[in-house]
Image (cartoon, rainbow, N blue to C red; front, side, top):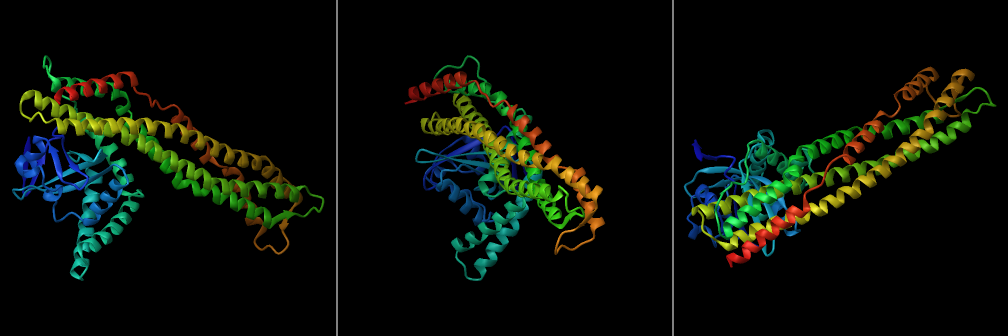
Length: 450
């Protein structure tokens, strides 16, 4: 059901729709929901470039980024404003997945209001900058390149290093909200024929992936927690480096003291730890990226299953043309998702191992400094602390800082160890046998369609 507010057309969460194009963006297939929203008859839409619904307020830079990723075989997700043939606007969250010889795009109602609002605002000023650039003599391609640079800066400010990274996070959020709305593959009990078989297969894929899709929220929480840890990780290196600097600055009054020897060993370990923190940060970032890819794959499976099931149900109902090309392209998209899920799961397993290894190195170096550092501090306290040769500063203040560093320790490492434990405890499993059987059932029904 749709409603019109001002110049905008709005649709319901269950109105999941799709289209497919060839490699140049020419429409090959679409469902009735898309045609109704776009207000184009099928004979005008099929064979036309997908840009027929492009809204002039959309920044060209977004489409440049999308096409760059798609050309590299990377699925993308973005909020897009379209214009229907009757002049009304409608917003969608669009995912575009490369398939054999083209692309499948599934669109849903934008449900994450906060992200949708922030990116919509960015589109406005980026598009204004593109128009200003064209007003100064730039062509559309040059303006789009300028817009892409500006949009990348905006995405970076939101914590995303690329459009693909933004799309992964946004799709996981949108899929969660779609689930909360209760959108499911429809049932048509007693129906027969190839379309009914495809519908039954889609329902089995949905059921077999329910537990995984339901954990998208858990995956996103882990990614968020890892991101928060990364934000504070620099303080570990800063404290390790400051510890080494203090030990170079202070020494004992007692020429027979063990403090200089302790300092030499601790400085070496502290500097190793400071260097290792950089590698640990890389491992954390890689693992977070792998988890986000896992959530993206799970969300894409649900999205493509929903639209395949909805299309098959419409064919059963007689409200949709029995077009094998549309079914085939949706199934190809779903098969690609399942392959990506297997790959993502393997990457997650590998990355958690790398994370734990990097974490162990840093923890080992820091642990080896803790007790010697306390002995060094006690020695200076008992024997009297003085400045090292050529060092400057207030001894009392420096000793106070050294004591504070000892008390503070490195609680971030405990936090990371707890996070790693959470990651190890995540259930990434699916009922692979049931999924495989459901996909085989869909393939057999597709063959029957001809």
